[in-house]
Length: 189
Image (tube, rainbow, N blue to C red):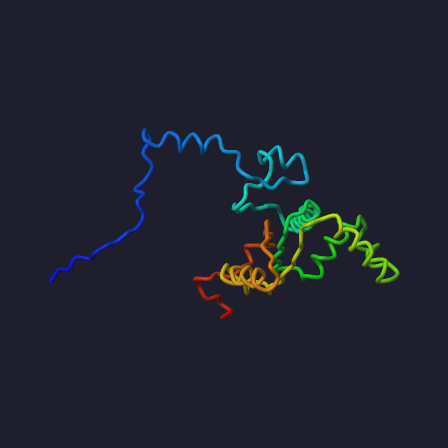
């Protein structure tokens, strides 16, 4: 016996009509979307003024070329510009990421950072920086190959609920060592 299935959809859209949707198309073409500018003019020129919000952007380069160093620099600069930045690391430790960001923000080398004589001096430098920005910077480490998009969604909910933190920018270092939310890994994680 052949049964027919009833399909119900509440969406009224069946596509865009070229001649009837002229206004929507024009608004799309002429809308200056909100962008997050890079702190590097050359990148702003290449990207038409920065990163469009709600987009995925990727830095590609060979091994040990400086992708993480670039992302740490950008994280610090975007923090100074007042953005909320979440840095998810799947390779380096949270402290190693923070060390690089501290060195950039405090205009020190990592060796000079380690030679600051007392906590009060370090604290004063960080508090002075905090007075000059409205942004926040959070670093979260996941073990290599153990986290996937579901973990990141959960982290975002937890940050919102527990710390009232909503990132403007999420940096993920790096996506090709994330696990899959669909397939079990060989290690059983």
